[in-house]
Length: 289
Image (tube, rainbow, N blue to C red; front, top):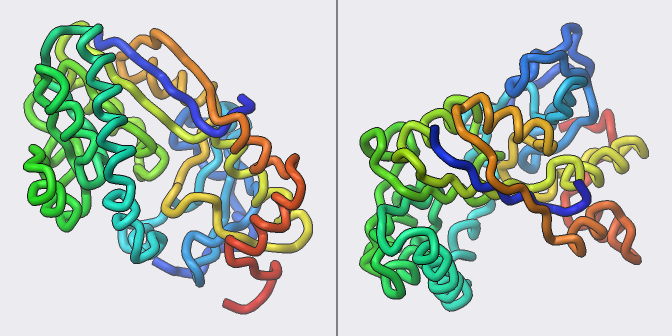
């Protein structure tokens, strides 16, 4: 993979001190293979942790997987504010997405997992006969979406608020899977929510590309935050295929995009490597927390 994100469509059928060099190889949460130390990274400003990489599927992840409180500290205070600032781009994105849904089926039930403040939901609702609903972990974002758009939104995840089995014709999971502590049951639950013939549209950052700056700087003795806040996993194409197929879904298409972002992450554009180091809160390996 040489892009920064992957898109798939499938069809239904705390801050505790971590060891610097784990004494025991980790068991990969994706394929069950053995995973060994790759680098260390800052989950948040003062939370340095181990990242391991699986020798089987290539997945990298924080190990041990951080708890919910530690992950919450990784998000900057303005994280949700960005969704409101992008109102019109997100609304017109919803309109474009509505056209694609209409080509699939004239109407149906649409579920957006991790919908922000629901602006894209409003675009789909206003430009199609589909019935869009969204899930978001932030109660504040849900309240904002309901007030701003009258969007059908619920606080929670696919387990607590996803609905009944076979209740959705299309599920969008856009840049969410990498935040989920245990991706296997998450995808199995998505499969359970789909009606026969339904679609799951999954977009996930290109893991090796996103982690590459951290690996390069760690080899120079510098520990950095990862590129995106709260990302726990860095998936390869092989890992995603395994996850999808083992959840009972069949892959219909697999595409890559955002080549320019990938070039930056690899340090192939002028000054990109140094800008990454400056932006993502560096610390020398072995420095006191």
